[in-house]
Image 1 (cartoon, rainbow, N blue to C red):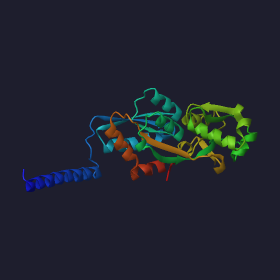
Image 2 (tube, rainbow, N blue to C red):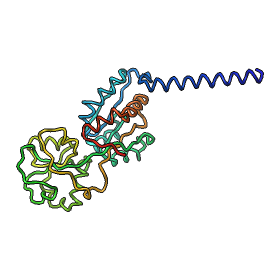
Image 3 (cartoon, rainbow, N blue to C red):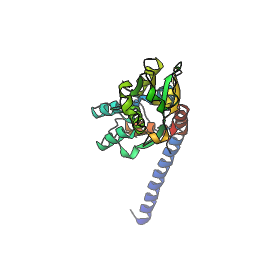
Image 4 (cartoon, rainbow, N blue to C red):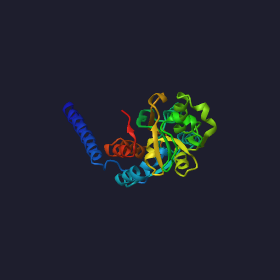
Length: 269
């Protein structure tokens, strides 16, 4: 092949690659980008995310990608961490705290390039909707005679935040005998909503989801050393990696973000 023919061949190859890239980009933009047939996204998500995922985001994603099924597992972030470490099939993990995400990252299970500091939540004090308890602040718990439901601080991020807040407010030691520990934040919400606990500490999003409880107040700003961050990441060994990436990309679209905000979350900037 002479020099001129070689140059023409190289230019032709570049043109083909460029057209392919542009076409792929346009297909991606139009939402029909990837051939994701018969794939599954195994989602492990904190219990406080169940409503927004089940009611809104999973149906939206499956409509956009008809060939993909999202299979969620909800529990406390600590329980999910343990399950993932023990082999739970997971493609995307969304925790209610960095503690669990960081632990999995340290063990080499998370694709760190996808690890995103995504949402924020607030910690609130709640009582049953029909309660006449004279509580207007966390400080009022000092003289409170009822049962206080919190997530188990050993495994539940909401419980860890509750303990941190009460410790910083110098209330923890005096209240320990009054605690009823829940296996996740939904269990805490249900205890208060059903009246088996007289007060509880949950996320603002959980309180917003139930008409059986009312919010007394938010945890004081100086009571938490760190904000309630919800990170999300793809697992390093995601089985259907293309579908998992599509799901991660979908979560970052404006339509998905709007749903998180609608359910009471704040986008982490």
